[in-house]
Image (cartoon, rainbow, N blue to C red; front, side, top):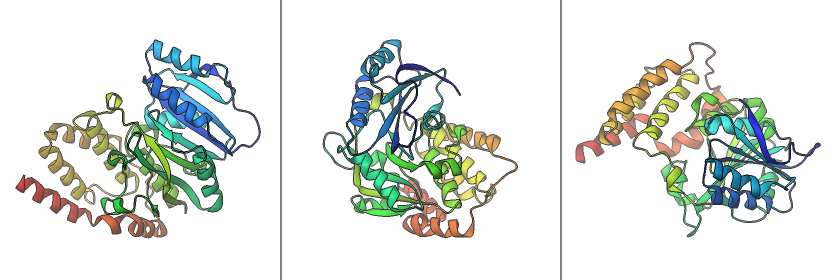
Length: 328
């Protein structure tokens, strides 16, 4: 994975600093520039901002370059290919030295000038905390962005609170670099969808915790033109990657059968049965044959307490989905 320097600083300053803010870009230059400015406006914290362009139109890339050309706290890179969310974040996260990695979507902004400082302080205060997920709200109205709620639905009334969890939402989060390095970053094979969950599972297996902080907020513009619709490509990655992760955890295909059945039902309901079958086949093809890593007992207990207890069993959810199909 390679990228060329387009504008800004060639490398961040040497020596320790608090955080690297990483932003992936694909067109939407105005929104991306606003995200960069939001990062650069952070106070009470030492940061470096990495922006990786993954295929913007030349005129859009030129806009980004002009915006950061003389800023020694920003590095703008352009990848030779679209590496996806997982691969792109791996690349730019690995270039910095900050003890915290803070990711921000390019259609988002930090709600306050001290957001990054609070994220860094929160990680510093709890040595076994690997990552923090922020509360994601709509940019204009400030309501919870339901498209970015990655936690059990039963916890939505607790959106303004804090709780231990098993994942975080990519639109805005912070990762302790030590945990990032120990867990091995993202699995680039995932490309898009479930990469945060996969990273968290590996961190939890190593004894780390994940926390949601409803008092630390990201404002999200939810730009529709670059979202991948649930009707095709996104659904494919959703199904393929989730089943691939199950296999990586050491679970056999028989154990995954209820989940597979649920995806087939949902695909049938939404007119995506062919795409669902294709995703299942792809998961089987990419699944590892060796080197599987079952979750340790302590990690299994953590998952049960902080996720399964709020969701119910896969069988319960499968039955609920079947009843929805029969009634709908």
